[in-house]
Image 1 (cartoon, rainbow, N blue to C red):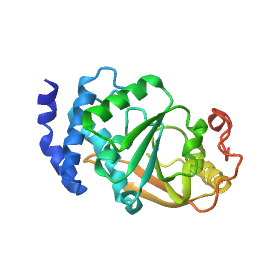
Image 2 (image 1 turned 90 degrees about the vertical axis):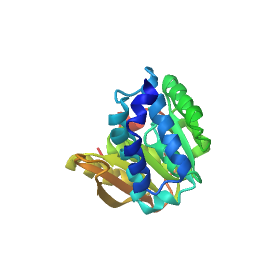
Image 3 (image 1 turned 60 degrees about the vertical axis):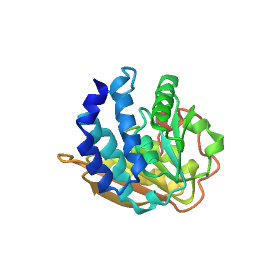
Image 4 (image 1 turned 180 degrees about the horizontal axis):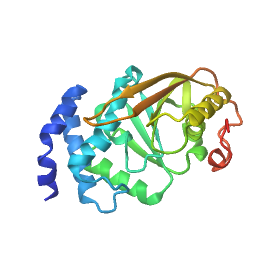
Length: 239
């Protein structure tokens, strides 16, 4: 039944793959992501039906490919990966990149590993633990991606230490929030980041208020970051 539900959406998947000029193997990997999502009642998301998931998960994730530097990234960190979006679709789309899926909850990590195995996504790896405690990842990434995780200032503090100099953060946001954006700019100034673009995107028909906030690491992040686990949320920068 699950395969039948996904097969009904093959045309939509092909159009999505063509839109972003994905390599042929990526199509099969996206199918596997949808099939695993639909079949696994332990999936950590309420959006599991393939028809909806193509838009809400796959198309929304692949919108990052509209940022030119995304396609040339070698090392990508998906912070707070959850059910694997945007990291898993980006791993399928960018076979020359290595995607680290950083997630602290064990059950979500188990799900991510199941999807990776089902899709043959050998360029994706799960990092189980708090992002603030992942010392191996410091300064090691060309791009960090974050989707629906935390207020902007918190996201910036998570991401900045992981980025190499000149690396970028792509943060998925909805309708603008002036107070949150002001706090983010203040946080960015402390972290060595600079807002370079806010790009409106329309990943699927009917999508509204979808924006990618792009920050560049223009100088080294001070050694006091990352703060210990939980502090970014408890005492956000810029507040």
